[in-house]
Length: 68
Image (cartoon, rainbow, N blue to C red):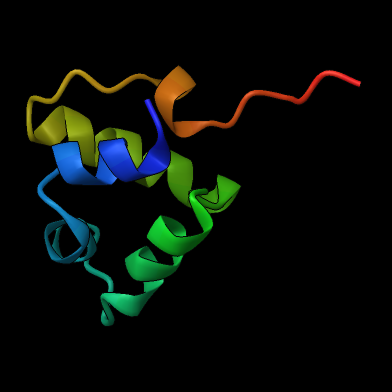
C-alpha cells in the first residue's frame, strides 16, 4: 500500500493531522507529496491506525529498502 493509500485509509490529510495532533495539515501534506512518512513519525501513524481500528501494518508505512 502506498503512503497516499495509507493516509486516505486513515481519513485523509486533515484527519491524519488532527489524529496526530499536528498544528498544521501541511506536515501530512508533505508526506503525501513526497510519498514517505518520516521514520520518527511512523510509530505515531501506526498507533493512530490502531486507535481507528484500521488494518495497517508496519510494512505499509515503512518503505522497503531498494535493491542495489
